[in-house]
Amino acid sequence: MDFSLAPEVDSLRLQIREFVEREIMPLEADPAAYDAHENIASDRLDVLRAKAKAAGLWALQMPKARGGQGLGVAAMAPCYEEMGRSIFGPVVFNSAAPDDGNMILLEKVASEAQKERWLQPIVDGKVRSAFAMTEPMPGAGSDPSLMLSRAERDGDGWVLNGHKWFITGADAAQHFIGVFRTSDDTRKGLTAFLFRRDTPGLEIVRRIPIMGPEEHGGHCELRFNNLRVPDGDRLMNVGDGLKVTQIRLGTARLTHCMRWLGMARRALEIARPHVAERQSFGMPLAEHEGVQWLLGEAAMAIELGRLLTMRAAVKLDSGDFARKEISMAKIQVADTLHKAVDTAIQLLGAKGYSKDTPLEWMYRYARQARLVDGASEVHKMVLARAFLAEGTDFWGWE
Image (cartoon, rainbow, N blue to C red):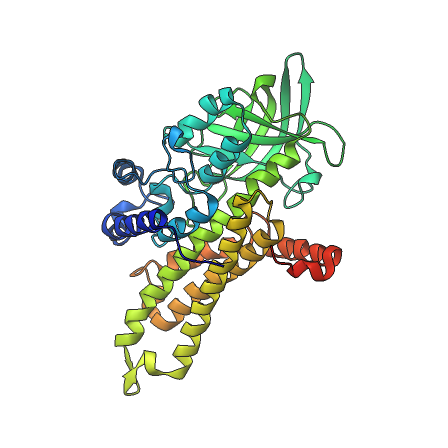
């Protein structure tokens, strides 16, 4: 078990770290750098994206032939972690949700014609995208089999009707991937389709207000009213919609973990100089045993999350779905992000609760980690079922 990084990966990681610290972090203290939804303003983002492209740090997850850097999942992990140290970081490198997961999915399963039309503009940063699956009750959430939105055959195409909500990025997206019911088959009843924002029949009902801060494009409610899609814009085969969601969400859950680990590290980085300098009862905070316990537990949790994330990444690179490993990483890192940010706020006191540091932004953002891409309870069910099926082999070695 060699945890060292290949020289070229470590070099790229260090380049990203330097870019984040020099170009992106300074903007966090500038109120004019934020848009109305507390993300980086588009004019500042455009400048930084151009610099990231020029530096060869663009779209690490995509093949070089598409303008990316051709990294495997394990190589992405340390690089995404460095991006995640800034609250504005991942989107600058075109490695933020939901585009990140959508690009990875399309590169894996789309036809060459579909890649040219639907994927390449996302890779180039010309358009944004969204993945439309989640529905209001009693429709699909963590359980896609509850899908109510339907697609019906009509000549050489399909007609889509239904209701989706909490669709991340939809308000800024031009390209959409949507999952709809095409039969009542429990395993092969869903199919995925590609469509554009301006397709007649798509209504963006509202941008749902959330605790925030938000990804670009927010989290939206959508209605589909006889939206027509040609059969050529069907993704994979009829009935492969569940497979599409599994392929899309597996890696996406893990890249969330990579970015969240960077944010968790940053929270402790903010706390570290404060506890070293702040005096309390005749000594620095860092010399108090209670403070050391808080820091030690949070630092250990981050390292555990990194190990679980890298193990899952290596399995994905080997061709394994890594369902157990991804679920373990998702549970651990979602909890760790909240723990690290909460620890930093506690140690900084009123300053941590204020907007003088990014910690309060991180705290509000961190709460969604235990919900997005499958609630923690669902991932615990995945692990329990795997254990019940595998017994002692649950802890096997490769």
